[in-house]
Length: 238
Image 1: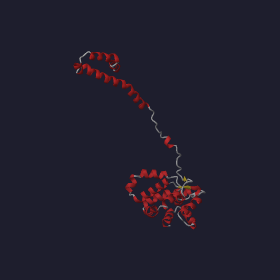
Image 2: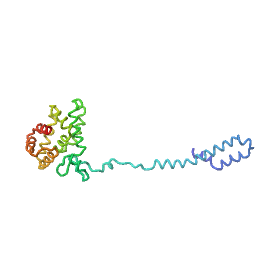
Image 3: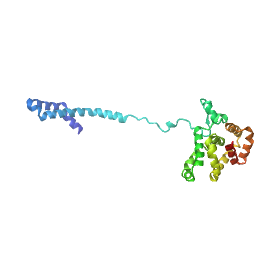
Image 4: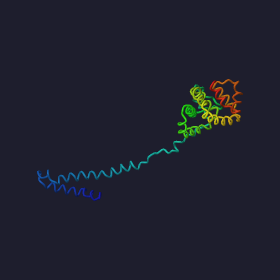
């Protein structure tokens, strides 16, 4: 259909319309239907001549390859070591002093600290209904730090004033929450104390919280006998 209409607009047909129009007198030519028809034909011819151009432009736009970033490409950076993150050489000295200098130049990450604070704050300030409704989220938070060293976990709590002075006393005063909290903590501390590196971690932990060296044996005794409530109350009072 397009080819047929375009054929009517080619030069021979337009010239025929011109000849008919030129044979008319000047007065009749102004109002002649051939004059109007000639103008329409010229307009339509121009439109049809532009169609291929628009087709090319549209093709260029739609056929241009879209550069997409694959999900795999966004994950090129190596996964974060969830146990403890390495201290970068460009970390400021003041920032390092605010956080525990664990053996081997390792520290809990800021994200891990935030997660620990969220868990402790939620356990201390939220009611049973909220904790029940958000149990799955709390479980995910807990799993994200399950490989965090238990002393690093305690450091995250007791270097924060609100967690130490407000939230931990509330947790220990709630029998149900306290039992679950102490159960998980005792398991992790019991495993940790058996490792050869525990003494080095304990030294760094005590140093970060300004605990005197003469408390070392007492702390180890609490951990080995799973008297961790006494250990936590000692840290609160310290």
